[in-house]
Every structure is written in C-alpha cells, then in structure tokens.
Image (cartoon, rainbow, N blue to C red; front, side, top):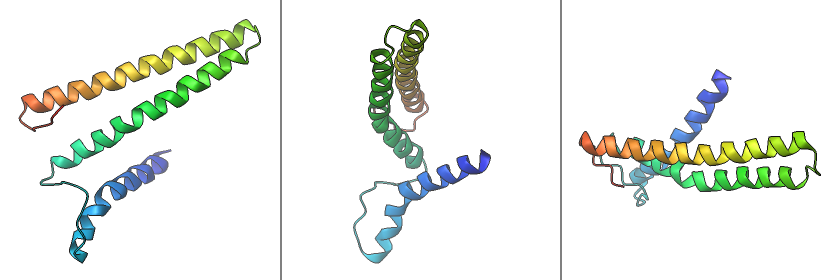
Length: 113
C-alpha cells in the first residue's frame, strides 16, 4: 500500500512538473512556477478541479444503488449512506481548500481565491 501511494505521488509530481523541463528545449511552458511555493498551489488547483468530477461519479453511483435497490431496506440504507458520504466529502474538501487558501493568504503565500 505504501509503494502504491509512493508511485501515485511520483506520477502526480511528474505530471505537474514535466512542463517546466520543456523550457530547456525552447518550447514555451504552460505552467507558471516562479518559486517553490507555487508547486503546492498548483497541486491544490489540480485537485480542486477534479473534485466536481469525482463528486458527480459518487453521486451517480449512490443514485444508481438507490434506484436498483428494489425496495430492499438494506440496499436503500447503503445508498442513502453513500449519498450522505458523497455530500459530506464535497463539503469537507471545499472547506479544507478554503481554509488552506485563507491561512496561506494570512501567512503571506499569496494564494488567491
């Protein structure tokens, strides 16, 4: 599990940092890294952009489970829990993003909302 997490983090870092190495070949980069503090901002921006897609998938799965429960109380309860967890997860994720941005602005990192 640790190796899987390490490989995913390495892949994410490679994807985010790869465009900056292209500048050496004379190709204009799409990224705007000016210093090291821009990297976490870029990571948060990417993650927050994936959040609606992930939330939509989880909401669709919960809705599908609710529709296909066919009146089975256990299945209906599972679907309701899935829906609740998806909504709470979105609220927690956006709240964490907002807190990180507000604290970053107060500490002078210049993270714009």
